[in-house]
Amino acid sequence: MTAFLWAIITACIWGIVPILEKTGLLKATPLAGLFYRCLGVFLGFIVLMTFLVKPAEIKAVDLKSASFLILGGFLASFVAQMTFYNALKQGEVSRIMPIAGSFPLIAFILGILILGESFSWIKMAGAMCIVTGIIALKLG
Image (tube, rainbow, N blue to C red; front, side, top):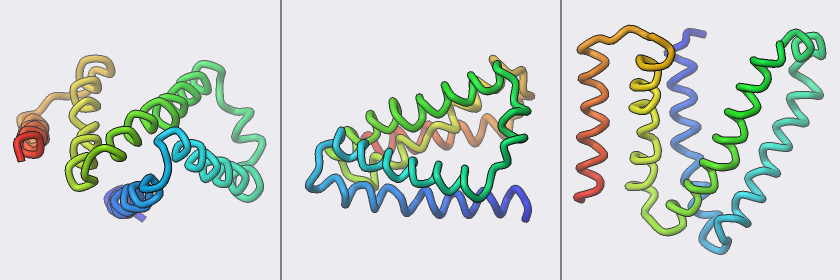
């Protein structure tokens, strides 16, 4: 499969999940929702460890790389998920999700500033579309 197809599948899954989560949060606090989401992540961990990842793959990762991945997992799966659930509990999924999903704009800026990735006007145009969308959702 190509990277583009993988990305499309990811977008479809990430588009479905907030509907499930908003529905789950109707009768749950954001923290209780996060608890149950973590159970889902734990189930994924069990599947990963049991059927998919080989011990040699885990041992081959150096400490620095593992530290960055662990920090990313903590920030994305715990900290950001907590803030996202608070937003989702209080707002409409049709407004919250596109705003929370504007993370490519942050990644675009940091990719250029920190990772030294190339800048192009096409990338900038895409970033401006994201900014325009955020403003439209805030006003609408």
